[in-house]
Length: 276
Image (tube, rainbow, N blue to C red; front, side, top):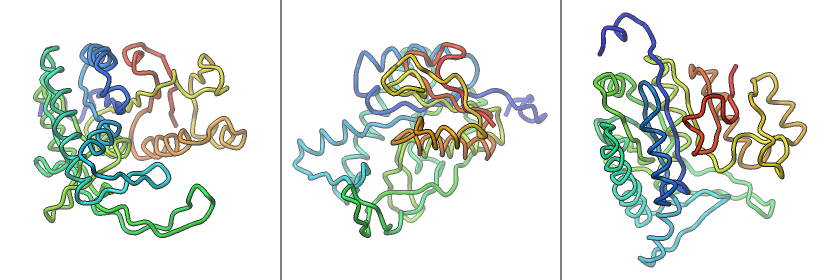
């Protein structure tokens, strides 16, 4: 590690999470990586790739089952998501970053034991029709531990980790793991070593006061203001768990979370900043 890290000074680090809709479109990905490569200071990237996995599974004749928006990962689907996330998507991002003079290293959770997970137990889930049923998600993982010291050593040496959403259970099984969760847990772990800003790239410009007005971005939200926005219905649907997880990350050490459009990750003050 650098002397600055050894002395206890926390250097700033930006961890960007980018979704499959961006990484699967060549033009969008190119713009994102151009901007990511110009972010000052230390950085890391976490990516998804679910749409590509679905398309390739369909081509291979492997039926995909989704329950409340979450993929059931059987043994054959696990092979597909591993090929797509850890292979095609991850290595394409690494390759494109190298072309931009960013010394990137693509990783799954199994590489160097960087992310340890456990297989998600059967859960009682509320279905779209209002009923509930027990759901076995198969080879889906929930994060137990991120090896922050190992990642910090790599980062201090000038390496930019590019994390795919594949974990492992330390017992020989790979596990399909939610990319938002990978990003949040990695940011929390790294907050012991760095002053971490977690940035979620989103298809909107930020959290909107009016869902029908793309320019009604709320500049900042504190943990005290968040419950009222939920009560008022401003924050709902898929944005609700994203913000709940974001404020949990802040409570556990992340300095701030920014939700913004992928085209604005290099624009200071763009999007919505979440803070304590």
